Length: 127
Image 1 (tube, one colour):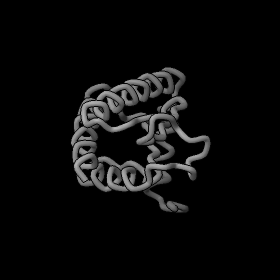
Image 2 (cartoon, one colour):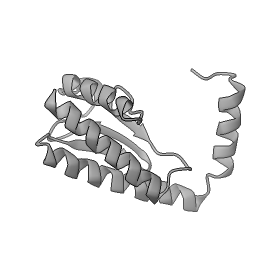
Image 3 (tube, one colour):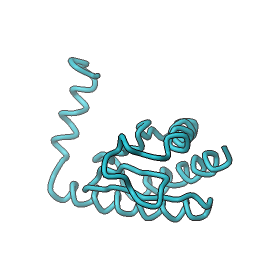
Image 4 (tube, one colour):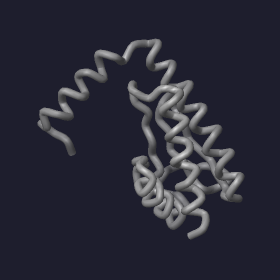
């Protein structure tokens, strides 16, 4: 955890100061775009894809439908490969497929993130 880490505490303070209703809506819009573009990339690589999304939080699965509980996922091998591939391409996706957008992400940065995750999907699909 980052408990009592002064740098992350300061970053959290600044993030909360920028967390307006407009910014929350913008992050949700960007998350919806990320979900659409990940689904399109997964189709391109012939991977099943589903996503649970709430606002700016996403949890992705390489199955045709998301399980009722993340612990019941049937895609552990593929999500593990994608997790490592995403990090190799400079994007952190939690090992369980969870992603959270932040207040600093805008359309231009999301375009870069999508391109990097597309490469990670390609790498993950090829095994």
